[in-house]
Amino acid sequence: MAATLQSRRPKFKSHFPTVLTAGFRFFFLAAGLFSVAAMAVWTLWLAALAAGDTLDVLPVRMMPYLWHAHEMMFGYTAAVIAGFFVTAVPNWTATEEAGPRFVTICSVIWLSGRMAIWFSAWLDPFLVAAVDLAFIPVLSTAILGRLTQKSQLRNAIFLLLLCTLFAGNLLMHLDWVGWSTDLAETGVRLGIFTSAAMIAIIGGRVIPAFTRNALNREGYSGALPQSCGWLDRIGILSAVLTALATLPFVPPWGLGALCLVAGAVNLARLTGWQGMATRKNPILWILHVAYLLLSAGYLVYGSTMVFGLLSETASLHLLAAGAIGCMTLAMMTRASLGHSGRPLVVSGPIVLAYLMVIGAAVFRTFGTMFFDYFPVMLISGTLWLLAFAVFAWVFYPILTRPRPARQSS
Image 1 (tube, one colour):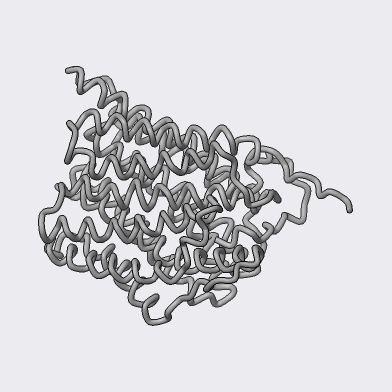
Image 2 (image 1 turned 180 degrees about the horizontal axis):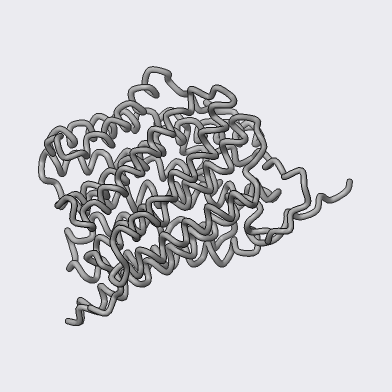
């Protein structure tokens, strides 16, 4: 995301609360707070299960592990994607930013979806599906209009990926309304690999650019980040194909083979971006670490599907909690600072949050090789919860207050 660019302000005086005046403000804050709440429920449920209590009082229709997967993917991640696109697409297309009315409508739909899923045991499943599925189509209207207006064919791939993200959510709901069976887990995989493909595309654009700009400002005398056109194309294509290969007609070894290709190629892309030169700049190195986890996530998942390296669920978390978790946190911190007119420098607590998300992902993926299941789950869940609690605490005033006035020289 071109987080260093200033957001276009509406031409009218807004009577909306500051948090609703820009997509990144509401959705990044909502994503952070919701991530804390959802992970707290999941961790408490696991703790109760470990103690011998099943906590049957949860008001959700689906199995708790599917609720957890759905809400982290189509609740938390979808909110970050919304904040990203509503803010970035106007910068890409040189069009006016979506106004507070659109942000408010989208926020109400997103919140309604979270409430419908949470109380799904008490509601008609078709109503739950209709409310929850409405978010991505409404969000897409703002993107489609601007991309069409400016003939942004290069970015049309994101509309395809939003469609596949919607399809993943739809598959889960088709399972829950009883129209099909065994599709909920397919929907989770489709959502995760679609989000990973978005990271492969966006990360390939912004990580070298942000790194190059920062190194130039610092007077860095070493080699600058370089991108290779054909490697970029293969990396993006393989990432998109892995998302499509999560559908049931593709055998597990086929998905695994594609993941091995995607991991190797995207790791090769990353080696040219001079990540070691960013080691003293946390807001930059977290982007490189997130992309490293993306590449490693593909390789670990591919190795699991082809060679049986780990359990599938454990290997998925290197992509889900690792790549997606780190990249979304990195983008939320960077974009929130840049678009609110603040220096692109993160505080010590946010650096700690970065480290906790990395730790949560790595421990969740590999921890059961050395420790029992429940301690691994509880420790990794707690690390994640604390990381996003820190983000919400530090960035709440940034996201809810107006841009600071420029100092006169």
